[in-house]
Image (cartoon, rainbow, N blue to C red; front, side):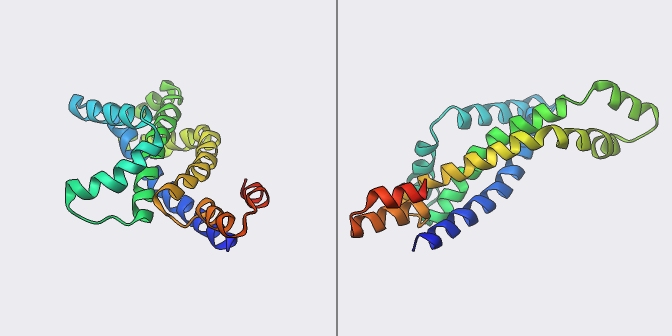
Length: 181
C-alpha cells in the first residue's frame, strides 16, 4: 500500500522536474531578455511565485483555476502544475546565475572567432553553465520530492496520503510516518 504511494511520489517528482526545468528555462530567458516588457513579465512572475507559499499556490491551482477557466482539473494535474510553476521559478534563478557566471571574455572570444550568437550560447556558454547549475538543480530536486507530500492536502495518492489512510485504519502513526520520513 505504501509502496504504491512511494511510486506515485517518484512519478510526480520526475514529471514535475522535467516541466519545472522547461518552465525555469522560459522564465530565465524572460528575466535576461533585452525586451523590457518580457523582462518585467519574467521578473514579476518569478517574484510572485517565489514569494507566496507553495500550499496556497497548490490550493489556488486546484480550486481557483477551474473556476477561472471553467474546466475541471484533477488533483494530480493540479499538483503537477502547481509544483512545476513553483520549482520552475526557483530553477530559473539557478539557470540565470549559471549563465551569468560564465566569464564575459569567453563569449567575446567566441564572437571574435566568428561564432553566431546561437553557436556561442550552445558551444561556449551552455556547457559551462550546466556544470555550475548541477549542484543547485540536485538540491531543487530533493526539495521537489519533499514538496510532493503537499499533494495529500488535495487528495493525491502519494506516499503521505497513503500513510494518512493507513494510519487511520491501523492506528499506528508512529511506525507509518517514521517509515515515510
